[in-house]
Length: 340
Ligand code: CP3
Image: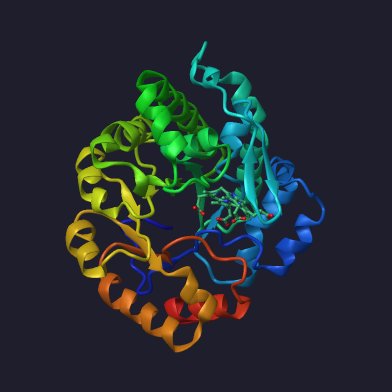
């Protein structure tokens, strides 16, 4: 099991962010069955299969239930579709979505039920020694996709979100609060269905100004973790924020016991001293090195293992597997880390 203190094995556990996806020919074939990506995400038979595909090929220690962070805006009524080469496009953002008439989110959770079905289907198929990771986007990152109506294209980026938050602070806080509340319920349902680790992807946390971190990042994250822990006190939480690791030590003080996924820019010795003495860390091979493979990748894998493998550590990438990654490089990586 990942993040288990009594793990006695000599090699670190290993899984890869975006380990299921387009770099796998069998995933591309499966995707042909459903051209609409959101519909794919809400089809438990397809997402179960996508989840298990990388585990059939590689000796990974965990499965991550196939889905997308954008299922949350979708069920809140802001439809999402994926344009080839452009990425996600969301329906126009309406500030009305910040209002909330009820806090039970019955309808939204009902719409999300195919995700929970996939979790239990995967759990049935997965050997019990393998962990099952459930995930959600961080409220800040989700709010950027909602307000920018897709990935930010402005320069500098995220101007719409930052301006909306500055001009409508109460509405923006309501939006974050609504997202946090729904995400907590969503994650609890995933644990009920069989997930044993939870990861929050806050990909765009790095653009939040220092004076707004407490409101945009810490408070929503704390609300989610505390709410899930009320029902499942021991569930491990991993937080991934690209370009915001400097904020991890103070997050850890305020949310004790949380673990961190490190992006490729994080200094390994800093991570060992400032984080690993107190909690688990996960990371941080640059996905570009996995595309390249060869000596450069091998040397970096050795460096990461040397710096972090003696403490509480899970090997991973610094961000998701890129679609152009050769499958045999992933095979080689697993062999380097696991020795088989
Ligand atoms: O094994 C896994 O980890 C796959 C499950 C997974 C997906 N998305 C599938 C996916 C996970 C954990 C995500 C998270 C996700 N989605 C994040 C956070 C992590 C990160 O990478 O920063 C974000 C920001 C998204 C939003 C999103 N989804 C974008 C920006 C895109 C388009 C860019 C891209 O990679 O294509 C997606 C689409 C998406 N999500 C695909 C997959 C496999 C590709 C869609 C396809 O099959 O055509």
